[in-house]
Length: 92
Ligand code: SF4
Figure (cartoon, rainbow, N blue to C red):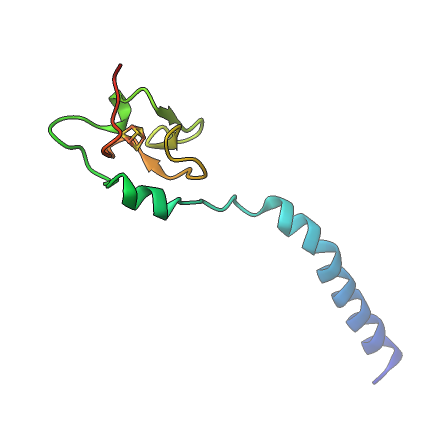
């Protein structure tokens, strides 16, 4: 291996090493789903009898995407559909 190849190899590995923190910071956030509580509350991604998460007091629409949000009753889940529904639907 020549000195040029060694330097090039080091530069490449250094560039990859330097990119890791940037890639970590720039990668999209992972969606989380609380499958256990969804099952218990019979959550579904479609309305039921004309009722949906949009009209439920427990729903918090997402800041960037209003079609998905969070629910006060299903913590740890940021994939609640605005068109979804569950047994805890609440308007009071
Ligand atoms: Fe949707 Fe049920 Fe949460 Fe209401 S309680 S926002 S219906 S998942």
